[in-house]
Length: 421
Image 1 (spheres, rainbow, N blue to C red):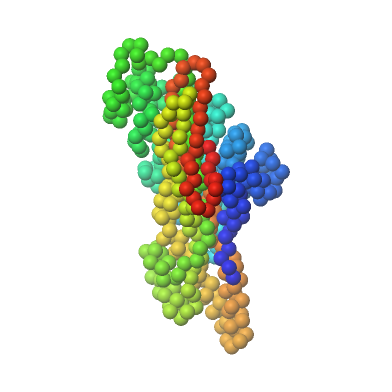
Image 2: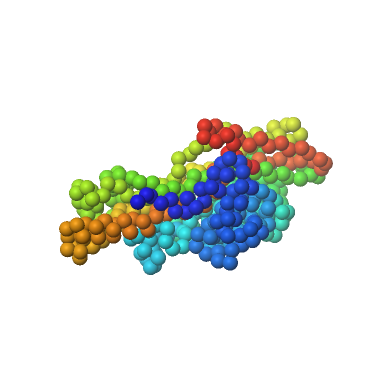
């Protein structure tokens, strides 16, 4: 019996379309999976894996500039998707642990939950809806507090998310709140492009921190009218590169799996796994892993009226995905080994009941095959998030301006075009 791909197999055609620069085809594939005719429709049942597919579709709709429908899909997913929690002990979790990894409600790693509100802020900004963007920023703050308390401070913040939220409140005229968010963004990394906006905001609020003071001190000196940019507008450029690595099903040698899983397993299970391996009854386990990167990205470029527009790397979601996966890899393999032991023990029990001999062997093999067939590694993930985010910002005078954005070139040998912006 082959190693089933589960969710990743279901969405493979849509991901392939994205990798070939065809978001329109990806939308068709996802609509077919969801059983609807177009992106304006939502299935009657939005629970389970449907919610995850709606998150995927929300990103494709954003690429196609269907921002209102993208917001709707992301908000549905936000309601349905739970946070990853290995401490629960519900019936679905027991089934998931013993038999299959893709049973029960999908539980998301921290970065995925944060990205829902982040990407939806982008949707609302693109629609010039600051009220909706502020609502998403406040939802983001709630999720950050929850993750900080339940997981860690490090997992609770993405610099680009705080940057975008700060921009939302700055454009809304709330200087104090904007400065708080910008300070949070600066705690994650240095954003040179925030220097001038932060200096302007310091004239309107008493919010100060050492990070803010240092950024302002590094700005070129100005006095009086020289500090006033005059009438005009702030333009925020967000470039999204590529696609985050998705989970895929993989077989791994039982000995190698035990190296990672043993710290998370009971001694009895470790002994049982080694004994089964020594008898040749099992040689591998099925488990979910991240696909290998097929694309490397060169730097994106942008110009305004023919002049270079400085861009800054703001977020590496491909790195976040791998970090989140490595944090739970041991538990994932431990669960896969526990399921493997259950299958073999069930087969041996079936053989004993059948009385051994040929009939017992057939019963044992049949039982193991049946249980192996339903052992589908959990390959669910929000696989259509961008791999990288780049931010640029510029203050422009009143009038007409021409922006040109050249997305990062693909250096992959496997695809000709694999970017979107």
